[in-house]
Each structure stands twice: as structure tokens, then as C-alpha cells.
Length: 253
Ligand code: PGA
Image (tube, rainbow, N blue to C red):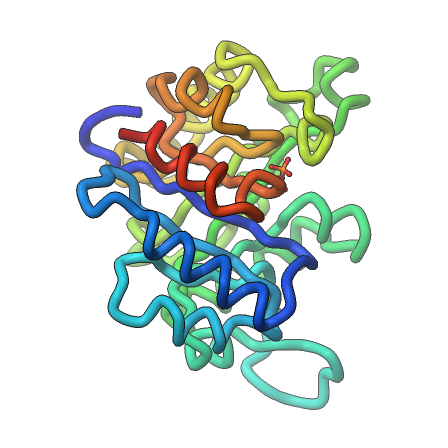
């Protein structure tokens, strides 16, 4: 982390929490949040709990995010949710390209790019997730895969949107597995991502936050967040309980 980028600690609740459970967790995080915390905090509940959590977080600095979106504004797309609907439900952020969407729902780089652009048009801030599988890492293709996902994900980005992006590097082999990239492994990829962002975004690369995700816990958060190009964390499992999530927020200073 460097001083010019405010760290972002993001909780991805995935397909967990009913409305009542989500409200209770949001309340605990709001009440437990140190008002002097340096980090910006966001939570991404499932769609069905967005409105309930928005109500619980009203008046607090904690921001709301969705976990995905469709790219069309409205229409006959059964089961889909548009960026405008997410904005209306109180979202500030939306995650796009999470590896679980790529893996289980077939999201391609092209789909993810459409989602990212539609989110920006609607006024949301997209969090673009990228990261390699274990096979790709073993074949020494990590940087190639990450570069492709980033380039394709950001294709056609309008100039004025350069300042309104967050990137999350999440090695697929580290998600939900308890295996974390070492701080050095993560920093190597983050520095590479920053160099690509300089190419794609120009000066905005210096203020764009690049989060790390993949088995972040209160025990490893500090060492990861101490790396120069790691500007926060996208947290799955450890965000489902307020005590562990609050500890990770505290690790950001
Ligand atoms: P994890 O999930 O912290 O449970 O590994 C991270 C993520 O998928 O965003």
C-alpha cells in the first residue's frame, strides 16, 4: 500500500446469508468499525439481501456492492439483473469477472468487458477480477493470462472512466482453498498489473487500487497489505463473520 491510495477492504459474501442474516452481519460490521479506520469498506451480499443491507448501512461509510451484473439495461432476460437496478438498490460497486462466474457460469473476457462497460455507464464502480488457475501458474503462464484478462476486460474503456475502476488479482488456486499467494508472489503480479495499467490508463494507474483476493485472513492480511502494490483485499470466507472481517479492516491501518 502506498499513502496516495486509500485501501479498500471488500467482503464478498457469495451465495451466503438470508436477508435476516445479512442484516445482522452488516449491523455488526457497522457497529464494530473503528471510525478512525484508514480503509474504505464495502460488502457484497447476494442480490436478495442488497436492499436489506442498504437499509442497515444507511448513514454509515460502508459501501454496498453487487457480485455480478448483466450488461443490458432492461429487457426479456429472465433471471438477470441490470446495472441500473443495482444502483437503484443502493450499490456503489459491482464485482465483474469473479473466477466463480468464469468457472461455473461461463463468463468470457468479452462478457466481462460488456458488464464492466455497462456498469460504468450506469454510474457504478466496477471491480474487475483477474487471476490464473493452478495449471496456468505451473505452466508459467500467470503473467500472460493476467495480461489478457486485463486487456480484454478493459477494452473500449472511455477516457473519463479511467479514474473509476478497481482491479482485484485473485489467483484461482488461492480462492476458498486456504492456500494464499505469498506476499512476494502477490506483489510480483500486482507490480506487473500496475505496469500494464500505466499502459492502459496513463496517470490514473497510480491512483487505481489493485486488491488481492484468495484466502485472506486476519493472520495473513498485514503481510499482504504491506506490499507496495497491494491496495486492499477482496475477502470471501473471512468476510462472513464480523470479527474476522473487522480484524482484516484493522490490518489496513
Ligand atoms: P476467499 O474468497 O477469501 O474465501 O478465498 C475470495 C474471493 O473469492 O473473492
